Image 1 (cartoon, rainbow, N blue to C red):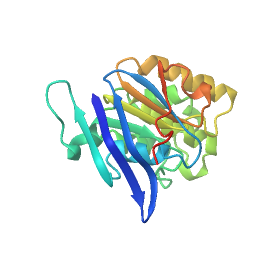
Image 2 (cartoon, helix red, strand yellow):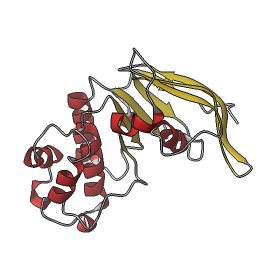
Image 3 (spheres, helix red, strand yellow):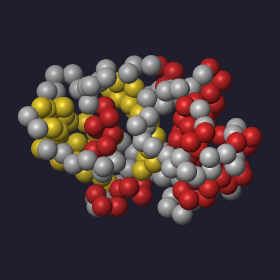
Image 4 (cartoon, rainbow, N blue to C red):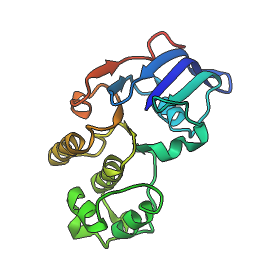
Length: 205
């Protein structure tokens, strides 16, 4: 999927998060979007995913043949972010079963849990998971779901060294056929597999 932003700006009340943003994400590209806290990374992720709308400018999506409708974009994108909640009243197995009703998760429930390395907790309620375990769930679901676009916001959050290796290996295994956008505070371990590093928020306010 080709994603293009032209003269893009987002404002909350009288405060601009960013303005005059022009960036293009090409199909199958692997991009790291770098910026400090408050620069607009998470806002941009929400705009691309259709959660938020632009205050000014334009965003378009294309499959290479025709332009895609913004109302259908949610089905084309998988994402993970620390601020996105998971339904904590579900067990891990129940949550994955629920997710499979909405997105194409090719592996079976048991195989998905095994690839998350969380077999020992498959029937435990998610509210009893540690922060690192919850991050494995968020990342695992997003990365293994079959969508053209994958977006990750600060994916190393709450991951220890072993979990970070797991994340990087999972990206190599499942990321080849996707357009990938990693939003990071400039932690190279989060985007080591990316071939383009962008700093789009410089001088864009």
